[in-house]
Image (cartoon, rainbow, N blue to C red; front, side, top):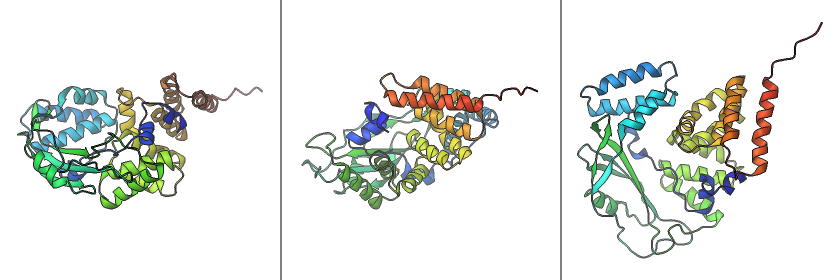
Length: 340
């Protein structure tokens, strides 16, 4: 953790030094999304080809949502063609009309005891309008309804999958700490207190639970509630690379190596695609493979982890990574031939 805190670009450094809002997802519309799909590597090529054929026709909106889920599952199963297809054929929505959202009041909201935050979840339809907006978090001043009224006047280009417009969940967070510093600072104790209050105010909010998990990981990693909080955050945000890696590491420590690799899939995919390149993702994968006696995979992942360590990383942490690689090399070396 100290190596992460020393890295100015790390997520942990951000949690420690700034106002962290957590992972904002479309949790308010979870029942509207296509169900999660998990594929084994051998299943991914067939599923990918079925999606490609579907997209050559005139699929319905529901079929497009299922197709997107299938593509993501195939990519998570390390099928490179699916990952490339997602990168090239998904076009995100862009706002083309509408004023900046403004809260009702203009006096500062930061009380030096907590932050002010609102999170809204809507459906972005193919006509570029936001509908069926729901309040995920309302904050202490109940600004959400005022914000929703302003969002209804916005217009966007729709989400596109291989040239097909499709409806998608749309979630936005609004940091209402105006009239002062952009990210006013709280003491560690108040950050933890605010994080706990958020999950009490909004127990279904992905953002609240992932924030609490991150705050505990950075400021109180040995807290007895951390495993339970992390598990809840993982249920709500299994695709988030940081949450997935933390959950996988917990599973490795518990000897659940296959489950650890399953949790790591999204994080490994993002690392291999150059998104959030992270040696700790690969270190965790190496430990899981080693626990399954998969020496070839463990050595490959740990070597990549060592190579990926930034030059400015702490020397002690670099040495730890290299020692672990040497441990794997020793344990995986073939036994010396016996002499008669």
